[in-house]
Image (cartoon, rainbow, N blue to C red; front, side, top):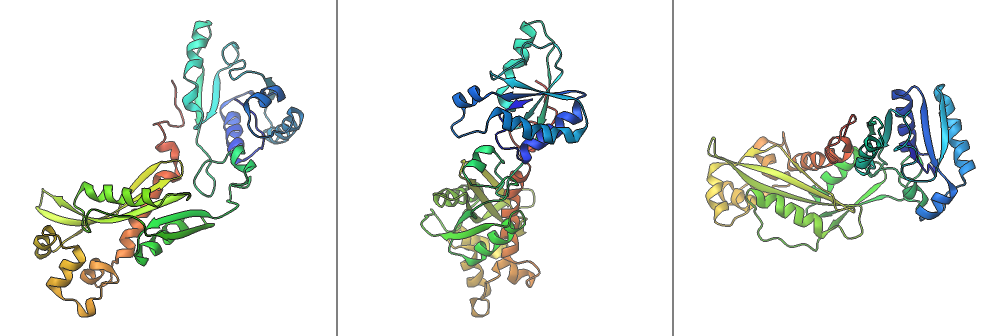
Length: 327
């Protein structure tokens, strides 16, 4: 394995630990001061300093290893017959495709590639030396300033659901409402639900880390000829990655469908037909139907939670890689 290891953080430690797990003898290429000056945009500690920190950590594994100066990107990877396994992070795995081809041209056996999952910071973005140097995060991955989350809505239920959902995966964050968005209709059907949720999310991104849009849409099931209410949450982040989550769906009363198809929202259709006392729908239609056994906030939370899940374990979703990828 190789790198600059300018700040020995949890991601580096996971990489080194995996190398000792799969190898009998570990060879670590450490970029030289000259290489760092040419390729790094931030100041990096001296080779000697970085080597001392690495040795202290690597000694704890009680297995043989050597640290060698790395003066080029490939180092000895394309020329050494003694190497068997290349250990890389998930983030860099996509950049190593030519190494085995070059080894084979040089008459060498191909390397087995061991991909180590990304180690995420509190904000669910990868820990990196660059981010630590910028003072976005600390070495342990905790955020220095709160994670900024926007949700495009005027509905306090959605805001509360967003706070509940993100509180399960991070501590230091803020959720703010964003109201400058527009929609084509108040009641989307089918795929328009995903489109409107995504439009809301994109409108509120601005300088935030994450932006959310949540829509309640109507989905038709041709198998039983029934319409269902499903909440869709779209989350877009500052790196333009979009994830979408869905709530469980509940059956919409048949009497409402004709009014909804004529342009009424679900809430207006329910109110016109069933005339709830004081128009009290603060827990949503599902709250009225279920006697508050299930509330709209729970459905919104479920959709947001399901949109967050792919961000918690990128090894399962990022470019189809798994922990034993072998090109």
